Amino acid sequence: MGRHSSPHIVAIDGPAGSGKSSVSRAAARRIGFDYLDTGAAYRAFAWFVSDRGIDPENTDAVVAALPGFDYSIGIAPDEHFVRVGETDVTDAIRDPAVSAIVSTVARIPEVRAHLTELFRSIAASSHRTGIVIEGRDITTVVAPTAEIRILLTASEEARMARRSAEISTQSAETVAEQLRSRDRADSRVVEFMSAADGVTTVDSTHLDFEQTIDAVLDVINTYREAIA
Image 1 (tube, helix red, strand yellow):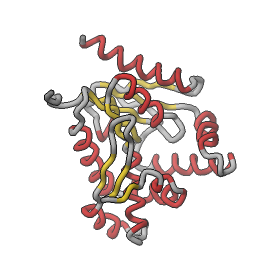
Image 2 (cartoon, rainbow, N blue to C red):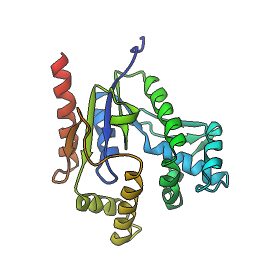
Image 3 (cartoon, one colour):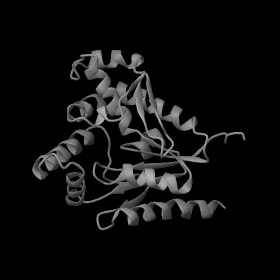
């Protein structure tokens, strides 16, 4: 069976703790789309920089490492993996040491430009009808012409509670400060708390996981029905 000339794209933005990764994956699974977690690439590049012994504050050295960053990711919702070269880093990129430097490398313009092109290439390689791409600046930079663009957000309190529940090895206070720090760092690079023109906001503050998935699917299905 031949592949589609280009997959439909659902672009989902949102801050840490909004549920965008788990909700995006679940939504993609339900409609038979692929799923691309763009944050994994920034984490994998941070891991790569650390593994090579590069100081993440040394912008020139970080940028010079980009051509050697051999990245691959599983985009089928149930076949997720992250590799750098032959090394599986699916779990390693969630290590606190990686989390501590990911914002530092992610705010370098050359890194963002390089990975943006990588995301577009990965999305274009999808053999399914469509792909859900989620991250920080997906609706405005990575896929500004996506057919469906969603900002998935939630109050700071709700996001902290969710992230604290996910990370049981750290205190609520530590998790809260990490989330605030991540928000501050990311806000220097991208606007992720308010929707751009043409982007639909889904506020999950008072929604549980299943309700949030349904809300996202409602946006997708409304568009699909409109063009049917």
